[in-house]
Length: 126
Image 1: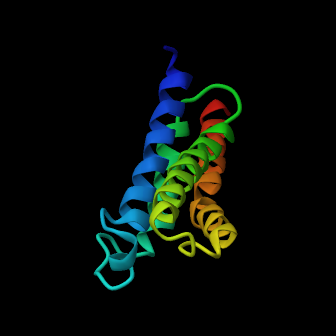
Image 2: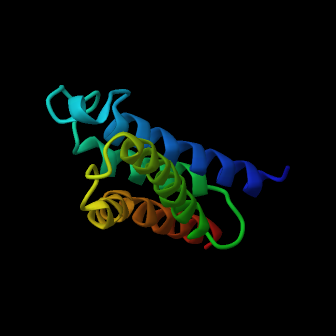
């Protein structure tokens, strides 16, 4: 595998981990809202920014694909979570489109991190 493929694979895994830590929380649907968070919610955008920055440093080509892979991994994991939760009670996740909007909003700082990475590389070249 090339360096870019490894970065994309890591980005997808990071997205899946974001879903496990911030949405699933390793608990059943009924217990998720009442338990304490593993990490505070404000750390998700910060971690997304750092992942976007670190995974794109030194990367050739378009860097936007890495933040898209992070969001894609998060989307895929959340879709699986929704299907699993709705097997027991179809009324769970009635507002599932908003979950995906929240995911996109929370992981959007990864695009900023990739952009800063591109600026850093431009400054190194000059």
